[in-house]
Image 1 (tube, rainbow, N blue to C red):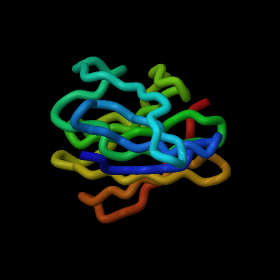
Image 2 (cartoon, helix red, strand yellow):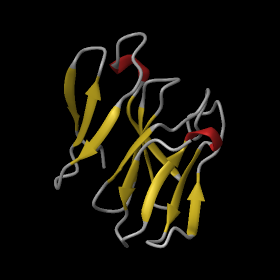
Image 3 (cartoon, rainbow, N blue to C red):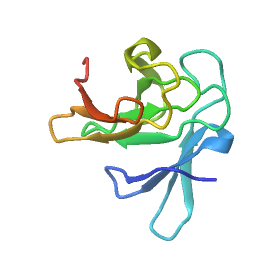
Image 4 (cartoon, rainbow, N blue to C red):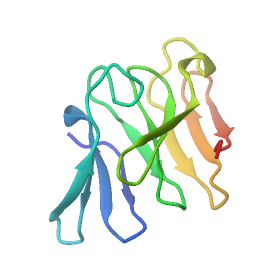
Length: 126
């Protein structure tokens, strides 16, 4: 099943496929273009069941992702190379799940934190 969707810099439709631990891109006619992601307990991958759940695309094409198994926010390059963690599990209350994401034109990262009932803002490190 698919969760989140967004339009990429080149007009492609990106969506999560959490059952396969992927982000996938399709053209306007629904034809598959590419995908990236992997199941892994390491920080570079997506662990647990059915991740990533949410993502947003920064102005430079990098992806911001969130997971439900471990509440954390990560940055990946446009081709899926892990770059760094923006917010580790320690930034969230125990039991936090369902972190929805958005970004603005200044690449601030907005996180809907359902546990705290807040919208939190994280600045991109690089």
